[in-house]
Structure formats: C-alpha cells, structure tokens
Length: 41
Image (cartoon, rainbow, N blue to C red):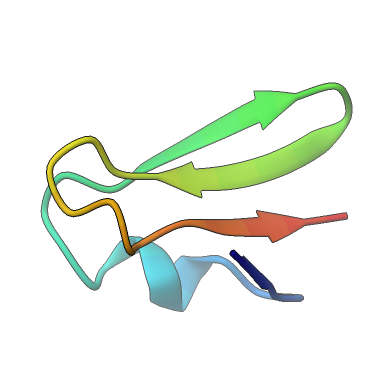
C-alpha cells in the first residue's frame, strides 16, 4: 500500500477506485484491481 500526500491522482488511475475515510485516515480502495490501494494520514 502506498502512503501518499495527494490521493487525487491515484483516484483517476482506474474507474473503480473509491476514496474512503476510516479512523481519521483516507484510503483509496479498489475491489476489482486490488493493486490500486493507498493511504493518506
């Protein structure tokens, strides 16, 4: 999982990417292409 300071560029990599907030952290998750995941904060 990548830790990035800007997740906007990662969200546009694939059309199934979702930005999710969990426990004060922001995650990019993707159910179909599981390699696209990232964390911020």
